[in-house]
Amino acid sequence: MTGDVEISVAEGVQVLRLTRPTKKNALTSAMYGDLCDAFDRGDNDPAIAVHLITGSAGVFTAGNDLGDFLATAQGTGDLGANVRRFVYLLPMIRKPLIAAVDGVAIGVGTTMLFQCDLVYATPSSTFATPFLSLGLVPEAGSSVLMPRRMGYARAFEMLALGETYSAEQAVHAGFVNKIVSFDRLEETALTAARRLASMPPEALAVTRSLMRGNTAEILQQTDKEVVAFRERLSSPEALEAFTAFLEKRSPNFRKPV
Image (cartoon, rainbow, N blue to C red):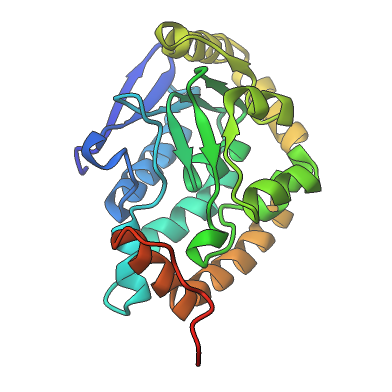
């Protein structure tokens, strides 16, 4: 455990809270590992019926730690097995997954929501997938899940143009269920989780499986995304994007040869 993911269990609900506020809850490799371990334990523990993921300090998550991205782009690091494990595990989680979002949800902070069964957000929440501006490509199955849920035009708007969506836009796009005030966010998500935990577990599992369908397509698309993402991370475009971000300047993708 890293200490950056707090895990608690009560009334059949496992709560996973991201607690790295100094870095806007940006996910490190160790945090990915903690989340995966918790999902695995919860899926295999009959006392746990539902997973609930949330942030802290007014932030859901700023996505993957850019320091890890830059190290990989410079050839001095590797995002590693935990990130790959996370994106492959998301579509395979067997028990319902609920997200309670407050503040920014960037990158994987947004794409993971398309693998959730219920998503609640505060009015101040924002959603963005700025992969292209970083010289990268979509991940976590988002290249198939987002067009399927939102329609191609809106998905392209987020994934290619990098448009930021408000909570209201997210509801209209179909990946947030309800907007609730900050003081009611966690209780609203927990109430839904407890309701699910009170349902017949086998019937719930079958219902969820029928609704989600065959995961093979998502896993196949994830294979393609992982290959493309790794290639893009080592590209000159990605290195320029990360360097420009850290230097607080605009990237130049049209440098003369």
